[in-house]
Structure formats: C-alpha cells, structure tokens
Image 1 (tube, rainbow, N blue to C red):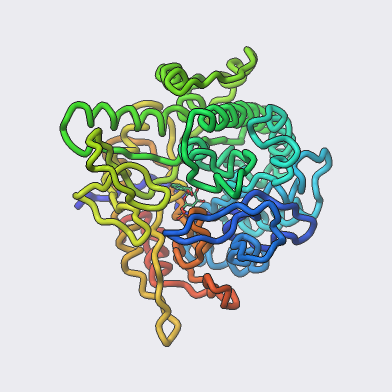
Image 2: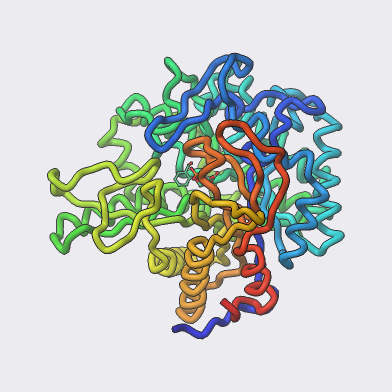
Length: 482
Ligand code: P53
C-alpha cells in the first residue's frame, strides 16, 4: 500500500468529447463532422462510415448523451463531485460549420462561452481539446482531409478564433486528441481521409499506401499543432498548451531478446513518433528508418522544421486505459479486443471489450515519459467501459469501476513518489457517453448514468452512480481517501 501524496492544487476532474457527449448535431447552425457520419457498431461489428449522414440508420453522435441540452445540470453534477477541472472538446463544426469559413458561427461561440462561464462559477477550470475526432466533414469532401496542406490554415484560423474569443476564460488547451492514434489505426476518421466503401472507418488494414497517406496527414496535423502553440503563447502568455497522446504501453511477451526489441520498437513508434515532435520539436531518430521500411516520402517544407521547433508544448497530456504485449512468435498472434494492439498478456484480466486492466502500466508510462521529457504531465483519460445495471430503486452499484479507478489513482500516487511531475487527472468519462470505438452507449464509462441505450430508448435523465460518491470523497481528500 502506497501512501498517497498528491500535490496541493492537483487538478482532479473528468472529461468528455463533443461528438460523444453533446448530441444536437444540427443545432444552432452546427455543420456535419466526420463523427456524425459514423454508424453504431459493437465489439464484433465494426462501425461503418456513411457518406450520407441523413440516411436511415443509427448515428450515435447525433443525439449522444444530449449534453447540449443538459448544460446547467451537468456542470452542477461535476461541481457536486468537487471537480477542479473539466476536460471538454469544442466541436469545430459549431464554430466553422464547413471548416473553411472565414467568419465563425456566433451561436456556436456563445454556447461554449456559456459553458466556460458556468464552469468558472463553480471554480472549475476548463481544459479544452481543440480537435477531438470531430473535424468538419466538408474538409474531407472539399480537400481530402488532413492529407491536404490547406487544412493547416483552416485549423489555425479555427484555433486562433478560440484563443481570441475565450481569452481569460480558458488557459489549458490540447491541440489534437490522441494525435498518434490516426496512423496507428490505419487511417482513423480524425485524419479526415476519404472513405472507400465505408472504410476505413476505424481499424483499416494497414498497407504502405495508407501509411504514406496517414503519415502525410499526421505531418500536417503536427505542423498545425505547432503553429497553434505559438499563436496561443503570443496572444496570452498565460496560455498553457499540451499535446495529447494515446499512451501505449507494450511489454515483451517473453524474455526472448527478439520480443524485447520488438516491444521497444513498438513503444517508440506508438508514443514517441508524435511525442518527440510535439515536445522536442523534431522527429525522432528512428523515424527515417520507419519511413524507409514503409516506402514513405513525406512532403515537407523547410519552414515546417522551424515551425515544429518553435511550437513545442508546455505539458504532456495522455490517455491510458490498458497495456498490450508483443511477441515475434507467430503462433501467439490473436485478436484481443476492439482497437487494442498486440497479443494477450496471461498476467492480466480483460474487460468485456477485450481491454486489459493494468494499473502498473500507468506507473511505467508516467516514469518512461518523465525520463524522456521532464515535463508536467496530465492523465486526461482513464476509465473502465462496462455494462451497468440499474436496480429497481434506480441505483447503480459500479464497484468494478471504483476498483479500476482506485487502482489507477494508487498507481499515480506511486509514480509521484518516483518523482514524476503529475499535475492533473480527468476520468474518462465522468458521464456516460457514446463509445468512440464501437459507437455504443452500452459501453459505459460514467460516474453518472445517462438513461439512453443502444435501442435508442430512454429520456437521458441523469443518475449519479456509486462511483460518483466515491470520487467526491477522493477529491475532497486530495487522493488520500480511496
Ligand atoms: P472507446 C483507440 C485506443 C485507445 C483509445 O475508447 C481510443 C482509441 C480510439 O477510439 O480512444 C480514446 O470509446 C478516445 C476517446 C474514447 C476513449 O479512448 O472506444 O480519446 O474518445 O472514447 C475510449 O471505448
């Protein structure tokens, strides 16, 4: 048992993303995002992308958790837990419906202003993800998504609009959610690449052509991110801008040196390809080998290297859910879960969606990143997607979720004793939302239940779960009463 030592002012809170939480996909002038075009799926049945978001079928983000219509109630619920920070994303399409307008949509700006003002009334600091898997669909239609350099200008205009509009209201920013996930998943919708025959929605097959396209798109995102960092700093020195990396912990399955080497290579590619660019301002030394192996030639302007160097982030934010294992033994290869990588680790338990529970992995990751970058860190996503049952008297006893969160908070406390500079933690998600990977409401992450299911039944009323009251105690005791 570790004694917990969370620093004073530690930023306890929770997170959401607009496309998974807000719904109201066409309210007040909002345009269609990539996420609005994704149909619902399951663990077994992958989500598909539809060119027409008005066609028959279930598009989970259209209504999501109806957060847009529960603003006051939801912020009050967060305040009830004693949140110090609320991580949310701005839907780009509420501000620029097509993504490339010059003038923003005033109604969209007003909505988030209201959200941020309410947060401050309760002393909750907003932490804003500028782009969380919800880029405007028209940027794909008109330009082919992030593979087109023009997207940098569209993003910079959008980010600059946010920095100016919310000056004094928001100081913590993240440029792109899980910026590393787009190419790892072989052309995720966050890259906005055109979809062929409904694919790749999520989890495409990776071939070199797709790697080329994904890495080119990613390069543009990294340049856009670095430009945004510089603008944020120039406009207000109080702005703190972070990267947001999907934290990928990969162990060697055995002590066979070939497995150890493979795990190291996977770890470096998955985390440091993007991390090094955003934190150190240049591509890591292994990038060239990787490009050569996959016949990738990136179109890069000389000025890009200057931009990347000048636009490094102030803190390192990441998500952490589970760890993977890798081996060179072909007989061990099997599919472990949706959107998870590697092979099954016999030492770990897996969720209904095939994600391992590994709190030690979080300590490993915090230490690994700390050794490499020595930056303040924030865990901005961590949680358990599970099926919840509502009792006859309307209660949800989610002891499994409490257990998961408790173990990970203990692991953070242990990492603090190792000397890492951890400044915040936002549970994913503090309220039930649509799963990004499967599109299900039934894969619930919340500390608050939302009465809505995958058959589209339910009136969205909110019920605090057992974990809600538990987390309130954790925050009140600054992480000592777990
Ligand atoms: P869901 C892949 C692997 C790890 C995390 O995931 C990932 C993804 C991409 O989906 O995404 C993050 O909802 C993401 C959130 C998402 C959360 O993990 O598939 O930033 O939007 O909801 C959990 O269970």
